[in-house]
Image 1 (cartoon, helix red, strand yellow):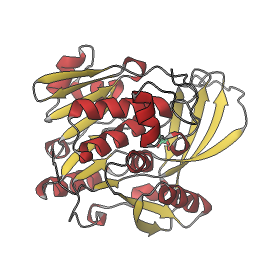
Image 2: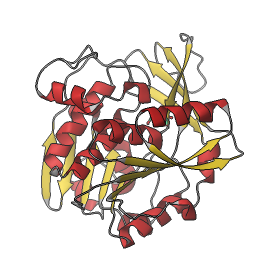
Image 3: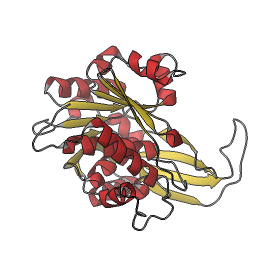
Length: 307
Ligand code: RIB
């Protein structure tokens, strides 16, 4: 992993406006459940991770994003800019990406994404990598593009971090270009065959470093041959949307700052716990002061619920 003296993070990926309804539970197939009022929040895995990285403050953060010329695109652009993310924007005629999210009273969610403009990002849209130390990728844009971006970054000596979400099989050419893979349990099972034995599954992944996030059970990493464990921080869960994205963005910010993997996992876990205490995706992502307050054992300012 790069330890560039003046790190810069580039995030390439999706932005979606999230249409959110809370309900007693996520409906089963064929079931209708009456929920509460409709809310909208800026989201999308790529944009959430860019916001998390910028708010964590480890390095200047740039995002390659495709937005439509619509009200959703304007709202997504504004949210990214307000978080301090510099944009490399591909204007497209398609509608901006949207996501439909049902949040259960337990805080868990179910999400369907209509990618729209996100699908227009192509392999040659990646901006020049001069000065970029870390490239952070997810899988809500075309797999061909993600694979080409990762290969180009690897060839340029840029550290490539891939959050393999949503779960799908990955081509060997993509995994060969990845320095650090971040997955949840379902994604780990998809990539490693099964995730019954987490350590064994992590060891089967053909990448130098890999982390599996386990919600309230914390996270486990394989760094070469070594296994690292980070417990979760106890919080009152309101909404888990973007908790994984917050983990990825805060993790890369800490690595760009020069932190060792264990410390980066600790900060990312604290950030991700705080993201669960507030409704919405980007609206819930904490800044570094709140994360440090949680790590110091103090209540995070303006974010009740951390204990
Ligand atoms: O990871 C959470 C995100 O997934 C939401 O913001 C939604 O837009 C989907 O991309």
